[in-house]
Length: 147
Image 1 (tube, rainbow, N blue to C red):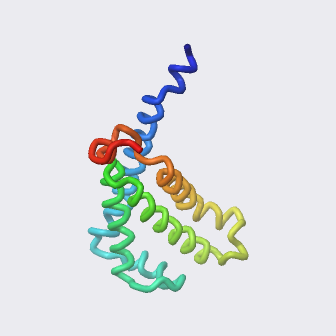
Image 2: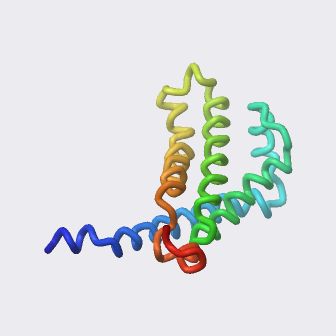
């Protein structure tokens, strides 16, 4: 009896909803200043320092992915493509942080790991969402049905 309650399909889908909303809010907050901020010179400087071209355009792309991705995650619309874009964005963030803390040779030091661990963790969650999908409490489920 307790197993049916604790491991019900509805709880799994509700958990996916909670996960999507929490990640969505966090990424809206992270993306907003990159997309709408008056000055992104610090972030542009970090990208340039590690050899990522594009300057302001690269910042706006990252901010757009985070801000718009956060919104689409929250409503559960195009979750798998959004998760793919955000996983890529987090991969770039991991690369940037590793390079800024001494490169791959120092990547497993506590200092380096603490700088990129959040992006790594988010990237892993996004990879999982690609496989798991948004759950039934999503716009994707209503529009496209469940697979």
